[in-house]
Image 1 (cartoon, rainbow, N blue to C red):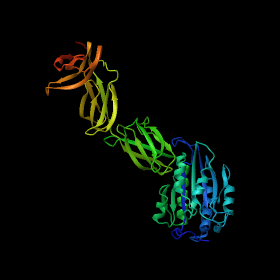
Image 2 (image 1 turned 135 degrees about the horizontal axis):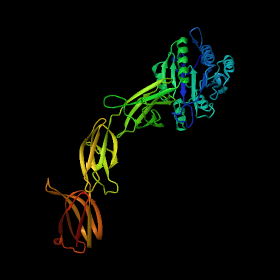
Image 3 (image 1 turned 180 degrees about the horizontal axis):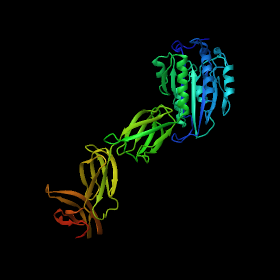
Image 4 (image 1 turned 45 degrees about the vertical axis):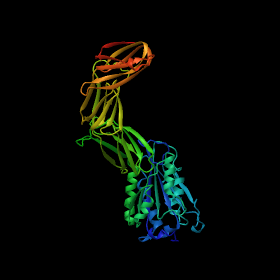
Length: 464
């Protein structure tokens, strides 16, 4: 009865998978009001093999019965039992031999213990299909924490793929992220389940008992997370930033939060169902990402992320005449755009240096602007003036700003061959308008007109 596939000689004990969060379309931040645990038991033929002084199946049934008694009076907890490999002999290789024997209920503990005692090992090991079916054993309820505990002594024998099942369930909004506890199994075994869970090892019946108690405790107790956003001095004082959580394996987005500090100045706590690992994106400017964050079930977790910030304030002196004056913020020395910020606003940025391009007329460049921890960097420009431009015939040309430092002209704006009046908003300074009449095709007819723009004033310019 102990014959399995070629991989069986290395499988000399038990492993356990605890799958948290079998919930469709459930936000993991929602506080659950009930926990449901589904025990999924391997009753394949190899469970007749020895473990210490008894066979594996008897050890499993004895420990499970003990555990069922210990959680009998736990409030807001329901349990159920699914078994596989127990109705058809191994030679028939029945890869659909799985059944929900005891559905979820409030007072089904004695029924479960009775069913456990009647089970005898018979058939094959069908992990993937059993996990797939187990996902539907939980009645729909977004307020529940759903947990699967799989107890088995071997790997898949029905060509199923637990990793593929996990990914398919996640695509449907179901999270499958187990802990895996193996007895006498080499590291290669753990690698086979890397895509679906975290591998742990136990070597004796006593060790298995300890692991089971720890796992049940973690399943019942809330798992919480505190994200410390650290400033330059490693103090958890940064806050009011959006955070997005992704599953590290599937890259599926799981939830979003706005970070906050409590009334005591401590980062607030998130209640969540644990999965294997998270990628956390903190939406600072620019964003900060921390990958592969491990969450330990049943306890309070603290994750620290460096997010030191200062403030960049953009201001126009006086009254701006621009409809919407903006500024392009880039990482210093690069073409990476961090943000496009409106003037007369303040925004937080990670500390560092930035190249700033103000989209005024003409544009203004401010390279290597420093943003420092918890301080305000003020960038202000003069109030613009207005050019009241009038052409009776229509002209072709361009407006240039005179740069006295280099004795050069910097292009500002082209003027099309249009007639009538135009109002242009320009920064203060000395300008030159170089043009000719649109109907005059002689280059010698080019005119050069100097004018000055002053803050808050209107400058008339009549040409041709």
